[in-house]
Length: 121
Image 1: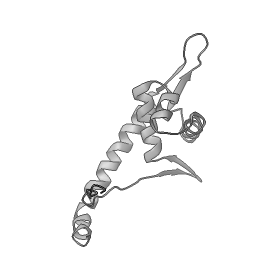
Image 2 (image 1 turned 45 degrees about the vertical axis):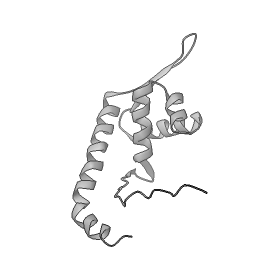
Image 3 (image 1 turned 30 degrees about the vertical axis):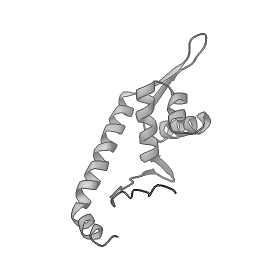
Image 4 (image 1 turned 180 degrees about the vertical axis):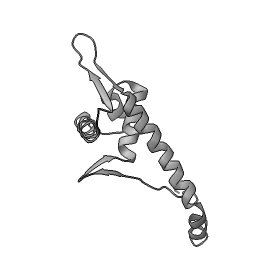
């Protein structure tokens, strides 16, 4: 007999996307990718943790870097030593501001969320 699935209570999870013309300059996935690059110092390691290919992660980094006035991620080529990646000052600032925006969105929606949550099973 299968164990009963434990249902988690309803929750609110707004997803903000920052658009630059027709491109998604920044959003929840790119924020998570930047946070993991900052933590690991590697685009490849960040990609592995997100279960995405290195090429997909690299293309997201390139797109972010093109959308902003200056790069959010800087890379160092490998050679004999393994290369790496770091967030630039702008990258750290964009990530911090985005995380604040996420929290503000949740805070702003609380009154309406409580109304809707009461209507859910």
